[in-house]
Image (spheres, rainbow, N blue to C red):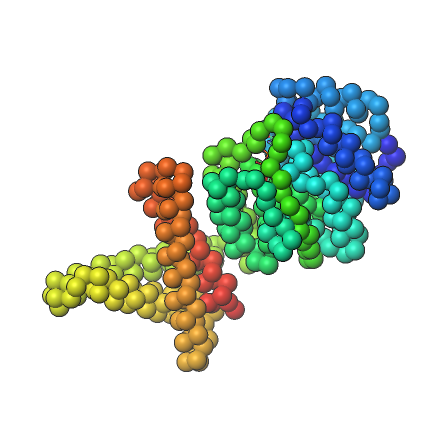
Length: 370
Ligand code: GDD
């Protein structure tokens, strides 16, 4: 292979003997048809099946295919990041080995980067995109992960796609902390980029072999989101302490709201003699008012504008965010308890944490934006 080429296609593999030869052939076909001078990097994590000998044989016959068998730090995202480092091209593209992503779209993603985009994403969730043959459970998990990702990257329809191209400068030197499956989130959160484009595609469930996604991949994902939030806050403000101050204050205000809510529920029901659901509705609304007033005067003091109409508009936004937070809480509770069979009190705790993360992030960005 020449010293450099136009495009490096990175294929992470783990036990892909049924797909990898055909996939390499399809990528080479896409290179040929579009005139791209490309290389293929197969990043394998010590497959137990025949993936390694199959790729070794192909790589022995053609000099644009390389096999890297990794020995340490097993993982899809880790493999991709090592692929970024080993590539000899300024444009990098990631694709699954199992034909979930259509190789014929490789030239489109490549051209999008050549046309000026820093990142080009194959999206399942924009018009023209779709997912074929996924069971309901997998759809719900994917939709939830995507919804969470969109909070961090508004405007990106598929921030957890595994099919994307990126300019090398975006990731070179970026402090990527790969873990789990969602390498694109890491690139979006820690890479240096300005322009992004998305191209729709239809995700097809694998025909051969099986998905390696496990339950703890979702835990990895949540931890990764936390890391990205922390990183982007540091990058934006230069210090996390100011942000953590706000988060702690927001949490304390939330606690005070619980006391207001409980106190009112008790007083209105026991002392004023109201029906308990009516008391509860009043208590919820007044705790929202309490939380808004305290957050406005204390948590986000530096971001507030004292004009009355601004205050009213902030209150409207806070109210809407709080209602959506309630929906997040209930949604996570249902997803974990009913679909994934997690014990309901643990599921509710996760729901409360998710709602807190939503409430804080949304209010920080919309209600009290500077
Ligand atoms: N090197 C390496 N190490 N490769 C891995 C590993 C690993 O630990 N685990 C999986 N792979 C490879 C598989 O061999 C395949 O080529 C690709 O990564 C995707 O693995 P799957 O296990 O088939 O993923 P999936 O179909 O469940 O998930 C897909 O959709 C997600 C979005 O919902 C992937 O495209 C993900 O990247 C994507 O986030």
